[in-house]
View 1 (spheres, rainbow, N blue to C red):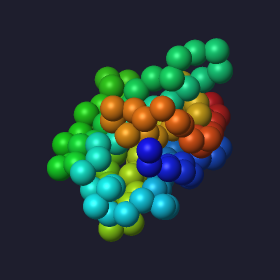
View 2 (cartoon, one colour):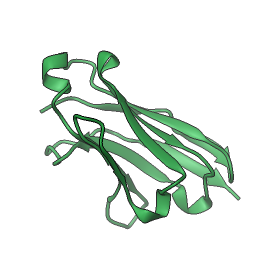
View 3 (tube, rainbow, N blue to C red):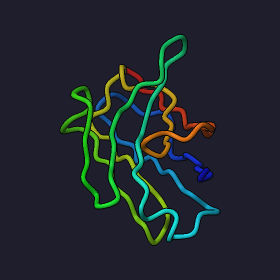
Length: 117
């Protein structure tokens, strides 16, 4: 189990941008580097949905709803995974979580993204 901490959420107007971070503060690089990660999001009363994935060799995939607007990346030296979100829409508002891919059982607290119209 790798401990992951999400940050970077906030309130933004529609059309704006945010960059989320997911840091593994206690992992060592030999543990972090081979892992694949993913960002998920969840709105109240709904399932947690996959948003984007990144492999150890930095191959990425996105759900259609965020393609061409979001970019997932990783900085192994900083043991951090990022989600750069641009052209935000009200429907992007959610709590965003990161996890390994496949997921490990325990989830972090996530980071809230609010988009005003």
